[in-house]
Image 1: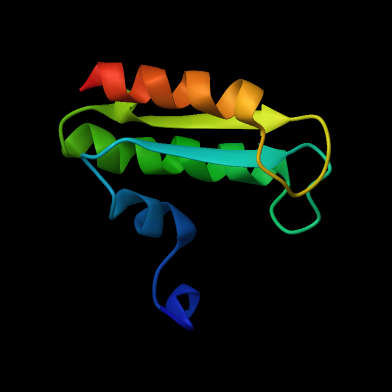
Image 2: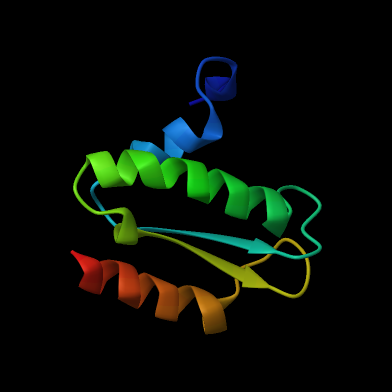
Length: 85
């Protein structure tokens, strides 16, 4: 949704997925959404997932480089999120 960040915080946007499984993936040197910031937002959104039934359905997976997908950490995190439900 264009401009959604004008109305909602990122943690609330992540919470829209609850109680479904969600894995946020970011790189340590990601120039768009660095891993430290992404991990902080995931921690905030866990309150929403807990209210929806299970905070363990939300996970964070990091990689060592920039903005890209990290299958070696993302898929195991997604498996855990699925199993949590």
